[in-house]
Length: 174
Image (cartoon, rainbow, N blue to C red; front, side):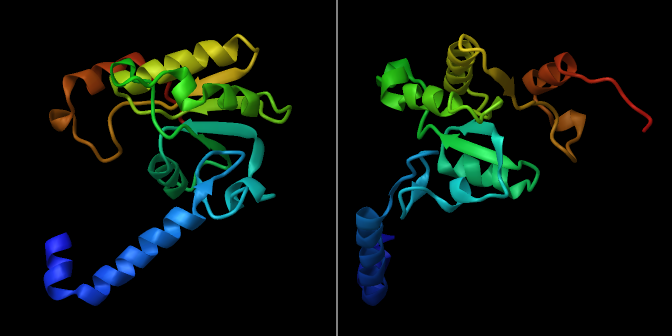
């Protein structure tokens, strides 16, 4: 990309550089949810339409945006900006998990929904958060996993299919 911009699109390279410089100067972390924003508290956290009693914990701002695209989650978020990874030197202190606890204990949150990835690190993060939050009497739930909508069983990996079987629900005719 750099070669292309330098060779054929120098003005575009300058604009891109200016935009990155502006972002580095203007973008910071929201004081409530830790996502990227240009203000102290992001618009999502300030919205009166959001359900203050629900807090969804995600690994990255991209994960938060994916949750928002579902248009089915009305609550607020906390963005970890990573996940526990002892091999990479990322522990609870590096993720600031004490801030998650403080946020969950703010008196308004009734449920924390863990939406970390189903990787080894994401599972470890969810397990750690569950223990930490439940010890304080906070209700903790985890997003489900299983066969994707529109998915065909012959193309689903065996681990996902086994998990879908373990997490099956009762059917209702209503």
